[in-house]
Length: 345
Length: 197
Image (cartoon, rainbow over all chains, first blue to last red; front, side, top):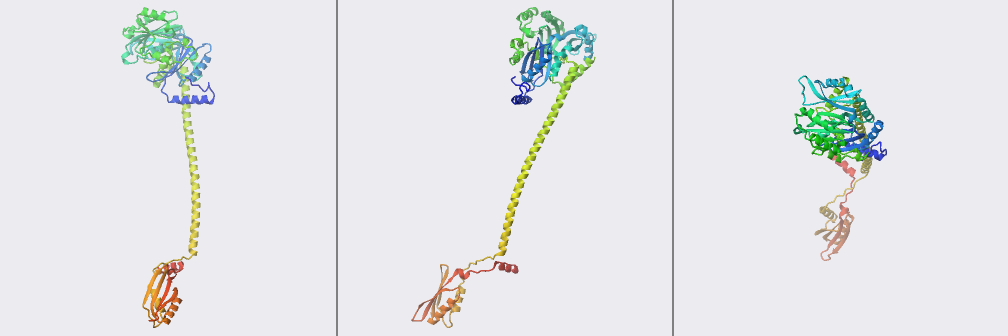
């Protein structure tokens, strides 16, 4: 975190130090992508090591000005260059305002056919003129209704908004491998200790809290079984209950054992109490392994005060982005080809 | 997570990132190859300099050896010239040939004279002798004169004369070194050896 980039220190000593650290990074343990999350007017950046403990290698936090994305991107790249991050590969976490998710039933088929079905009325349904579409299959793999339809969570984003966030980063040399909504990375962070086979039937609820809305996800093991979004005026407890009610068939009726809150608002004790009272499920901010807490211990907040950057729950989305596996080259390639077909459709 | 992760990255952006990554990989590959070539060139240059240094050192060694060889050849030539131009003294050491001394004494003895005993002693590089009982004073004097004129007899003296029976003693000395120092021409000796073979 104390290293300097050649751009920030043009002296020969600084360049030598940068070169030495770059060379030493070549022999360092493997690391995951840089997780860059745009949330609540901030950009949180985290990178973790790809080892058993997944400890945080580097982190930073910057304010995000939507009126000056280029300036933010420049500051972000400077912070990454001088903050001990490794590589340029990154995963982008999109803010709540540009992504919507909704459970629906579509005719079963190849992924591109399902995307085409979602795209058919996405503009009207989700309000995005140029929708960027993906989806999650709900329920067990291969399950379909008797009429050949399958239940999915359609995830639709505003392509123009995504490009406004990502293009400045690519212009400055960052290489995004993926862009995903905040609730997906939050669910990944909340499922970190539920990846074993013996945990695949454990049901929980994760609530991803943003300033302008929230997404409640019913988790089965380390997968999203169901999800529901509410805006800033919606009732989060109702969303959680609806998640349990409507998604119960995807978790074999298993009751959720806990509610995990993610986001800066997770520390609102009133919200936690309301959720516990309304749903009858304990509310927690971390798992038994203290995945977020142990990661947060190593998170350094440089550009702004730690109070505004938030605690461990506020960083959960960024940490979940850093946990994303982007090494499956073949899978990524096939996924890329699927995306090409989807957007062509 | 689910069977596959959600990805909302637009296709154009993905292609752009893919192109950038491919270009980066190509650049890294080119850089790596360039570095390998540079390292190889540096190693080759180092080896060439080392070989040149070794060659220079070998050349210096060869020059030194040639100079030494030249001096040696000059020395050998000089020695050969000296050998061819010089004669060699050969010193032959041998015991005093008593028979020759006795023969010389006998030859010097005057006719009709007799002697009783000859005594020889090796003293300080000289063979000293006494001839006892030469009858007649005149014969003894003649004997001493004859012996003194015979080389290499030295210090020939006429000793005690017995008036009663007329016997005399003649003493003499023969230097061993002079008597048996033979000076020969080495080249003539070699020639004789060659003729003999």
